Length: 492
Image: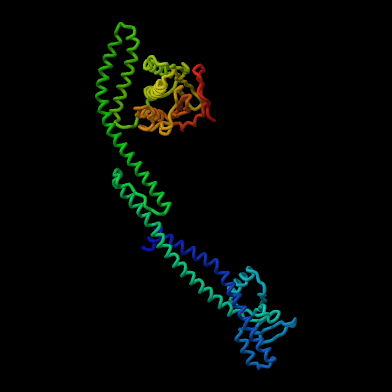
């Protein structure tokens, strides 16, 4: 069980892999080493045979059979042929127990031939009589031939191979052990420290003192520690922001409760204003009642849900032109004497299926942001609202000729408390608008922004359960106030 646990650790698996790789490397050099050993073994026998032959020639071949047999046994060959001065001479000889199986020329062998012959010798357990040919030592002749038995050669090769494998095993174990200790010190220890820091931080993620301080010397591990530190700091900020939002939500709920009571009283007074004989009051009273009713509904919704999620949209069919006209009239009153021109291109017969109150909030947010952006420039400007339908659903565009959004606002456009671009703004308007549109299964997107103006598009699917809408096409530069609004091209 302990061994299994060891090999399930990073250092244990590294130890096992190192041993396997070292053994694999040794196996790859095993065959060439054995082939070289076979060549050296045969050449050493030829050298002994040459020495024995020269000893015989020095005595004019006047030795008895006992001495000749002793010379051959010492050289481990059956006979020796020496070629000198183009004359092939059988110098030493003894009875050969079997026919010659094969001849091997070792004067200029290739590496492939040596490996092939070595493997053939290892896998052949039968004793064979072989003839070997080589160059004499010190150029003592043209060539030397000897006949020998392959069994001692094979035995010596097996013994050498076993010793080589044993040495390889020792080298692999020692190398793996050293690497094991090095990995534990260089990699495993910093990783364990990283894990312990993560566990320590998880116990109290809001405690800034538990943020990790990078100390690793290895570049990759230090990058991991720095990334973890950045993530922990961001998480601390997010947790603090969520805590503030929770507190803000509690405060908003209390304010909404009191505000609802105040607005209820205001609605009663507005109802009485409708009975006034003043024509201006009669014309403004319905709009005032509608605005107060929406404010009361919003307060009741906040109290009912008590959380950041918006209620699901209550889908109904209604004429979009009337809703747009109501929003434009309200914004015209807010604009007062400022030089803001409103252009609309909404077909009178266009009927959409959406939550009228939520869509009113979305469009009001977009149009109000556009108006305030133009007023901030203190120059005349135009706000354009267009709508239509295509194969995927309905689209509504809101554009202006204002100064465009700054880069800081574009990076966090639909994120609460981060996408604000006006001084004192919270960035909640676009975040709420995007959430409301997503609740319809649609999408609110920024089509373009720049010195020539800003343009948003709302896409609403015909079916609330429809898949996400395709990305709308890029738009052309801002149109002049005199040009009519055109529907967006349907994406392929």
